[in-house]
Amino acid sequence: MRIIEAKYVTSSPSVEKCPKADNPEYAFIGRSNVGKSSLINVLAGQNHLAKTSATPGKTQLINHFTIVSVSGKQKKQNWWLVDLPGYGYAKISQKQRKTWEKMIEDYLRKRPTLVNVFVLIDSRHEPQANDLEFINNLGQWQIPFVIVFTKADKNKPGATKRNVDLFIGKMKESWEEIPPYFVSSAITRQGYEDILNFIEITNDRLVQ
Image (tube, rainbow, N blue to C red; front, side, top):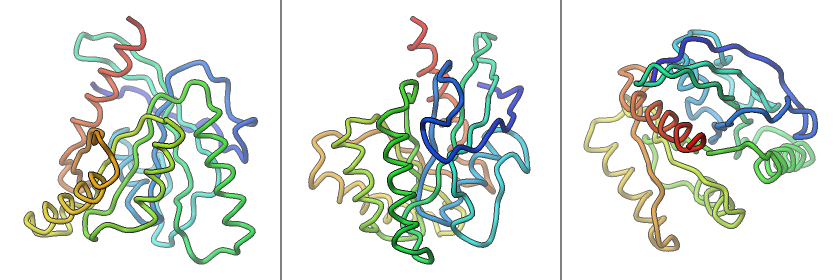
């Protein structure tokens, strides 16, 4: 897949305010400072499509980007890319945290054209409780998702593999089937072609 057009459309405070649900939708979410904006920008082939910041917690709304891509069969595909606020951000009030959590849950459970959620996990760390809790919630809500382990370039390869294996091992304690997962780096572009291929194949299945 090759993305030929990627445009920011709008930021919405609730699922009811989101754009018309007219194309397949892929949402990206993870803990704050997981590298979500960098991943989105590399996927789209643009440096500033999603706003990157050294300060966690900058994404506070549901951000929609309209995407036009060309598949390997030279077939155009139109879809939405959605940048969701990070979870697990500590430096906000309890009230604000609950507001974010409700906004995210409502979007995930009510958006009719949501096809898949990409859950970003920082590969530099051992399994984190809030990542596992969020993934378990997706399972309870029966929302399809895949996992993207980010920042693989920040570790030695052995450390990345160990943390990925530990995370998958934790999931196996409560999951009968493990979803697809990718290891990625915004610096080396590792995993990015695999992520785009996954979206392309999913889009093709939707129109069959």
